[in-house]
Length: 400
Image 1 (tube, rainbow, N blue to C red):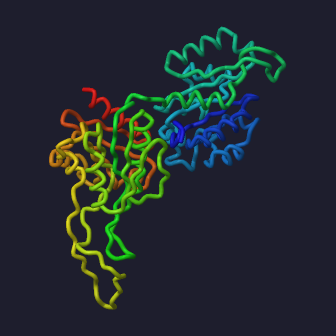
Image 2: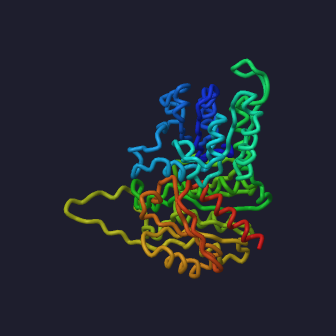
Image 3: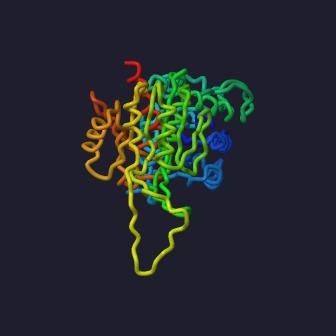
């Protein structure tokens, strides 16, 4: 998996002859594992169809500022919040000028103003237009605001001119975007993470479990690996591909997960308990399938499972930083604060699983990072972006 894996990339295509290269850009981003949505300006639809971009991205193509199908008709805000990165390619001289002026007179420019995500611009225009002082002033102004300028390339142009102004090739744009997410700050550090649910067997057929998908724990493993850390991921049963450069230890029950955690966590730099561990298990597993008896209920004798994260926090060779999740449906912060104190944790990551957009199995999350010194709220974003923020916060704490 590349550095763009699971990134939310918003590709905005404006109305120039190079718009046809937007199709290849979307294809390459998808090949890197990115989630891609596409915005076409009205001019761009003269060169490439919304249906083409929908087929390549796997998502509806957005062309209008007022999208009646989006929640509350505010499609531009939904797109702006969704994106981890916005790339405008090709960006015509007109679009660059409107961005510099802060105009919001179509979907493309409005989303560029509304998004909190980084914005990159790949210019494409005639070489005389590129060389014009007005264009150069606009590009300089955008760069001063933190907008990344990618290209342009030089060479033969559609009009027959030769010179700078060609859209950089899609492969080069993807490589440049990928570099934005490079981070090796945790080179040489060792991280142990638990993820997913546990299953507690009732009999050979049935078990007790929960709805955890493991997505948050796997995103953390990927983010730590991207930062250069050596990652050991202890995973319950999930339907996810193992992250690249991560050692995965498959377990099923809470007891198995606890055994693996205590063996691996000693002297680690970080331990993050992201698994949704069953609190209880049947006192005994039936050797054969328990048969239904008409008119009679079924009672199970349950015993408490080991508290994995508290056990790790009390190890004599305890990891330098121990963090855990508090997935709650009510009184989120009070429960999370109490959990941090009760279990001796350096950080609790509190998330409200009662909301549809942050429940088990969702691709987004919104959390509170709680330490003894401060509490920080991370707004709704993809789980990978949330994971990156958590990694940064934990790395900062380790260096203090």
